[in-house]
Image (cartoon, rainbow, N blue to C red; front, top):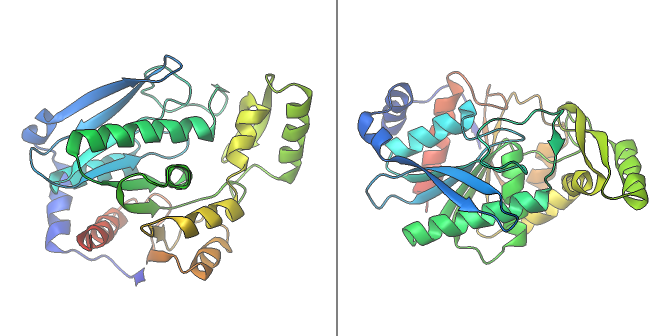
Length: 291
């Protein structure tokens, strides 16, 4: 499905107002919640309650970001205003009570398996809080994190997954990682798996981590991501911007060949900024209305 131009449904108009002015009532229903991981690290999430029985949604941020990244924040606030109960976790990325985005040059003590386990912990929290199947929404690498989670925890009570600007590692024009980097990391791992090395990953030219942690992300390239998506039930919906320059030219055709449900919003970029954020909200509303 391709959405052309800017469409404004009645609900979209409500969301436009909501994104401009979050009411004091909504703010009063926001709370920061905490959990402790087995390694002792404290993780945090913001829970936007509505006091109603609106379906529960978990929204996950992109690579090295937080819940306050504008695409995720606007989406969370708008869905909250629309009556959904929304949980916005920050992945710890190996940092206790992380609240800020993480620089490429930082020491990265985290793997995609760590991310997956944290997502599972928050999904369990939200399910226990609401006693309802969870709607999962991710943006960019956050969408890939959700694919890895759904591939690992296949019996999770998930009602729907919406993957916005889904990427895989090793694809697209900005991806710094390549086969040479992977082979170097494999050699580093064989020599000393605990040593910190500097690699290239996603948009990072200098990404310092162990070879094992680095390879955990590289394992989720196009092929593994496609295989995992094909097995997800219920089938996910993927939303792309028609002018997303961060995707390789083969990515959408590969997904379509798997008969994946794709919504494409004409003119939108990777982040759905400016007026395209309302097309994004409208598409999400329609997808959730089919539940």
